[in-house]
Amino acid sequence: MLRIGHRGAAGYAPENTLSSIKKAVTLKVDFVELDIQATKDRQLVIFHDRRVDRLTIGKGVVADLNLTDLRRLTLPGGHAIPTLEEGLKAAEGKVGVMLELKVPGLMELTLDTLTRSGFSSPVIVASFFHDELLHLRRLQPKAQTLALLVGNPITPAGFALEAKATHVGIAFDTLGKAYVDALHSAGLQVFAFTVNDPADIQRIAALGVDGIISDFPDRIQK
Image (cartoon, rainbow, N blue to C red; front, side, top):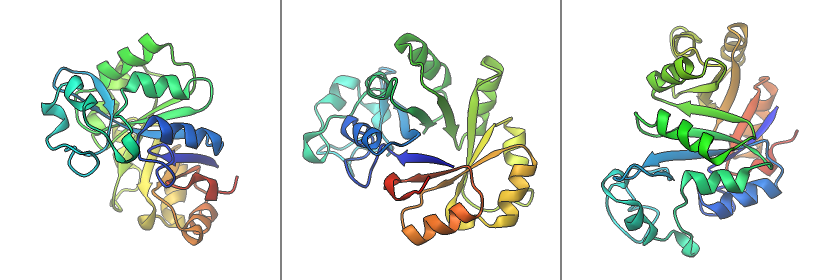
């Protein structure tokens, strides 16, 4: 079972920062999950929210700000918003990355950044926008992709099979043994998010999932 640090190791350092990535590495995670968006000038940055208001000293929508504008904003502790390229450099050779595309239309920019950086560790591309995953499958037939879902669909594996995904990410409180078994029977790897309470981690692990995503990845027993 894989141990995946949510937004780096968000329980210990400001989410999606280089510090959070480095903390996850020290906790010996298998992957770090990072959220990807594009600025107004089409630079990829690691940031979760559509707006910067909750996490920084500024206000506004990420897609309406240039990279230079975002660089002026800081997160708690004075941390800067990193670019994807900076995040990949922090993870290179140490840990795999799960890149969640937060908005449509980022796939080719993401692939260009991965190629330009020479990133050689494992990569899983994740999204709630399943058309993005299909686009990646056309571009790179052997890519690892993860279809995200909150809820319990009528056909357990249908959404992921339509997206031709290799993995699924499911909100942990909707998972049960029959659901996990159905996904496995369809040939899918199952990751549960975002599991922080030790009792919940133990319950989800007992279902036989393939990976757990947590703000506190050190709580996940290998």
